[in-house]
Length: 198
Image (cartoon, rainbow, N blue to C red):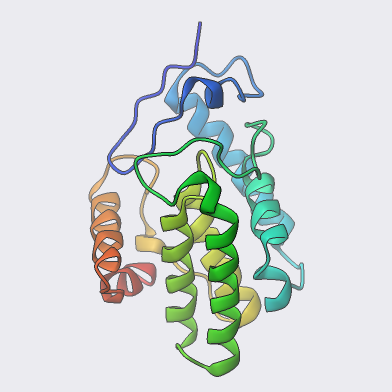
């Protein structure tokens, strides 16, 4: 019996080869997958607690990939690896390393120059990295945790609440979040900034 996934608004489907990367063969439903992924993400969050991280460490390909691997590596064999297929969104698969390097170099510049207030820098980073869509799965969750790492570790401020609701399932909170992301896609970061602290 294969993996039967039901995708909700804003989720990018996995192709068959990506599904073969599932490390836990007993998972057959979306609900089971969500449960195992959430446990893995909680393990990644525990790994982050008490770990002093500087901007020069966070804004690197190595850390960005390691965080994804920590979040999903118990569930997916390809966790931490850039996607090898093109999706309905994101940059071309071959452009991922270059786009990512441009992003973290921009972020270091923003930090050094004080271009944006802390929340805006973190949320702009989150928006740019999710639009690159580095990985086969988990890009939204990874981008939000990256923003939390930036705001908490770089600026020493409380992590974001991200609407304080369930973003993994179809809900009003998820709809509000996706609408805010679409606004940011059009150059209006305001709704996503507001949502991050809602």
